[in-house]
Length: 252
Ligand code: PEP
Image (tube, rainbow, N blue to C red; front, side):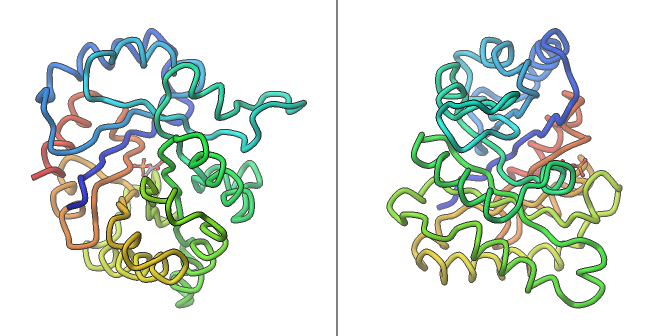
């Protein structure tokens, strides 16, 4: 009942010409009717070119971040109405690199999530523990806090599009991956927290993606467990062939 979602996070890579070279190579590699929803998240300056290049396909385009306000004196920021205006449909919220380098907190995640839902952008809210937190047995405490504060006060009626990405920080860009059992346990725990904060029905329909060094050779084992509904892919999504292989592996 939950449609798998495979999202590419291109981070601060690919100018517009590189983004369209990617789509030129990538689109012929994937079937026109997909079992999974496919989302590409380019950098801000490549959003428009990627939207144009994927027009008429089922591929959707997401931003990597946004401000929660519609407009204002916030130099350098991009607002949800600006994203809506150019055809962006999804937005990453609270990626661990945003939390680590740009001071994003569970409180700003919450503001952004409410704003994204109000503007009909599909929010992909990223959560996950650091290595030291896992090693000291604090993983569930961290996830509980991130979900409880991040999702606080969300209108359950508006939350039907909510997507969560579980991304253990120690697995991002490191080549280390959670074992399928570690990932499944974390996803199950996150789903239980969503049930507490929102409702069991929303928890059952919320897609929870795994992220952290997903590659063509591990996608099938990581993406197809009971509580894992797809993947958020960083490094391996920069290459059209490897991203297409991940989609093929993950959406069986
Ligand atoms: C990410 O940036 O969200 C990510 C999961 O990166 P990588 O796949 O490179 O670990």
